[in-house]
Length: 253
Ligand SMILES: Cc1cc2nc3c(=O)[nH]c(=O)nc-3n(C[C@H](O)[C@H](O)[C@H](O)COP(=O)(O)OP(=O)(O)OC[C@H]3O[C@@H](n4cnc5c(N)ncnc54)[C@H](O)[C@@H]3O)c2cc1C
Image (cartoon, protein in one colour):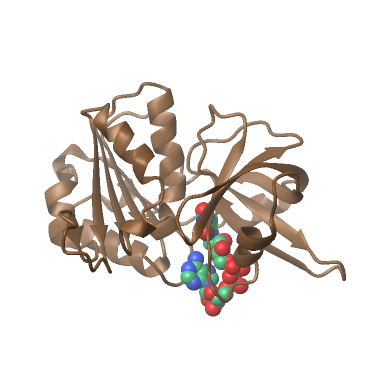
């Protein structure tokens, strides 16, 4: 697994203004914001931006958000989940309007990046909103008509918490080389025919490509999800150097 401190890199990037061009309610707790930065020179699928908010008294708060849109899109999309007692996410979900401007800097980080030029099969593991950078990879794969064998294993709380489900299902329907596997940790409805429970060794062993194929693996989500999924993968015999991870926060999924 690779761990790179990107804070020094972020320090060198300049803050710039971006205008909110569109807002989409994805689920009851999640919205996507389509942003138009003043000066954007492009990004790679998997990278993130920092967003900075400044109060009237000068108090500032900044948070990182993965870019969910592929490099092919003109606007930058970030998808934000409400952290109920949070400082920044409730503001973004409740107060931000189309036409507003905010400050951002990026793109940040090169360790959690996949492009369609990469060789070999691809295994993506998402916990909750950890789907966002993986969605940028899947959208980029789709836009570039790349047919790399790919599996996405996506853990969400319930059906209503699956972000981008229609788009994911549509991509998988049109591409026999893409498989999307959902597992729900808190779904109560009896008619859910998919997997239930947390991502575990059995789910990974059944759905990932075999270790002998040495797939590129990207794991993103809450810290506990990333750590347990990565441990299972290593126990199953996957090369730890092929596992790239991105941690979003302390809990959830
Ligand atoms: C590289 C990177 C990319 C990220 N990309 C995304 C993204 O695409 N979408 C997204 O929604 N978030 C993403 N995050 C998380 C995001 O940066 C914030 O941490 C999150 O929005 C919470 O901020 P807040 O100000 O609302 O909460 P805070 O005020 O920071 O925290 C309030 C409370 O909630 C807890 N908390 C903080 N973060 C989380 C969390 N993620 N889940 C559950 N509890 C939490 C804190 O411990 C604290 O107790 C990313 C984080 C990183 C490091």
